[in-house]
Image (cartoon, rainbow, N blue to C red):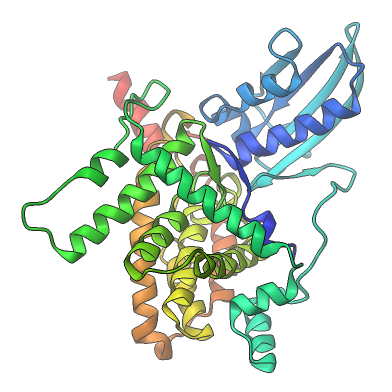
Length: 405
């Protein structure tokens, strides 16, 4: 597996696969063809279906010189031989002729593959590629999971994760202070500040926990939907789950930033295992690959910060992933707003429940985390294309149908 740096990326929302990935590919193509007097980009599959809502055309125009120099085409059909739903063709033009072309695939989390060549990436740093292998190594060396991550990665990882944690908290801070409506025709009102400032006459511990965690999740996801700066965890669309739960835990348990860095290391390891053995792309495997993965990451990180065992940690992650199996990705109008923002809050609360359940019931486990990961990938591949980030099914379809009445 690669470094967990590939799980946590700081960048602009609203989508790691639809904005960060295309932006990265466009920069590579532009640098390779500085003499071109124009560029053409053809988007296929999910990139075509939801690209306008996700801002794909906006970010491509920004990188390639604007509408006067770049032409963005939203293809209605997938060309022969194209199988990944986040595929795009780049063409460099000069005096009306094609100089060169490049086919890129946005595979999720801001990562890309370029057909026919290797994209410079972080080297493989983890010899272990499953949780079972990691657990065996930790048992042999008497390590906990955070110690395992820092032993395997280079010495700069702790500073990197500290930067990630500071950005997560800054995103929450910015989201809690923002008001008004998110961009786009849905006119979705920001709710984070409302949630955070809501006061009950007779508050209860449970409702206060829900209110605060949800406010933090809304704050992060709303910043993402407004093209603000977020951290992929593991994607932009699911960026609110880990920060919300971790921020709440730090406040209520008086944990240090160093403690939170250890928790992020464990959460990142879980996300890394899912990405390596399955997918974190909504266009490839539905929202189970995004929100489900984020919930598993948060649950595992919480368990570690609770001081639970390596086995309990993997059980928390397994519960979280298992109970998101089959979750579809059906963003209304292709915007990362409905149901995406609310799902971040619900998944954050579910991560807390999974962490608690693992404390009581880890000895009763029958399904391992590794099995849940493989099952999620198989399930995702079986989900109808309409429910994999195309806005052609589910809530997106019903909303569109309602507006036609």
